[in-house]
Length: 307
Image (tube, rainbow, N blue to C red; front, top):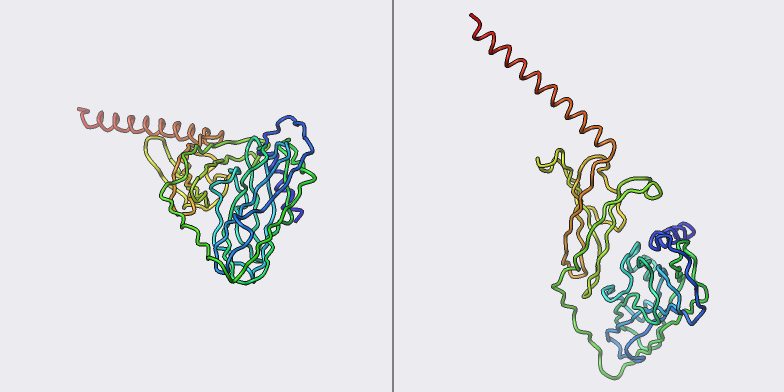
């Protein structure tokens, strides 16, 4: 757990960009679970929304778990398309212990009385009262230090399941639109990723939400002569440390939504110092070989026409 907390704090500092500390206003900050109605008939589909009230504070990371009684509900789906969070080190997903775990962030922070963290659909299967609750929740301030927002109230959701009334069936999600265009950024910094080149990226999908990203690198031996080698598509999250560190490469990033639609964007990684040294050696060797060929050709030509 301590390892995960450290990663979350580092993620928060990364998102905030080490901005100056902003004033915090101790207000009614809370994480709440809500559904459209308090009572459902057994067999109904129930849309549950996890929302955040920042209480006047600028935050950039939300982390936690959601639990529900498995004898009362089945998890049908999870949607992040309406979330104010744009980056997911841990996308909301059902873990082995039957809980929904998540860690999400937003660069530059978020401050509002209502923010959709994500939503999910439960299907009721037992008469009685089921309680959907939030646990191990952490909200971090956008202060550059990963400071935890204290006093966050966790508001569970009580749902009554009956054997009478009408069964609620939610309309199926129809999504034929890929995620929005985005721009992958290749960077390198002595203070991040061991001074290695990495690519960062983020986009949103307003229908079914971004499900995952893939990255592929295309190694370019010499510009204008095309690709020489490439990696396979790698399922990953941002930021992604590049495999090809020294030479030119094209970095392709695909964002997939929950319906399988994807958008592909590309960035170019430049040469580093070692790459320039290699290029310089290649040019020197090429010039030497060219001059040798000219000399050999001249010698053979002279010998051929020598009387």
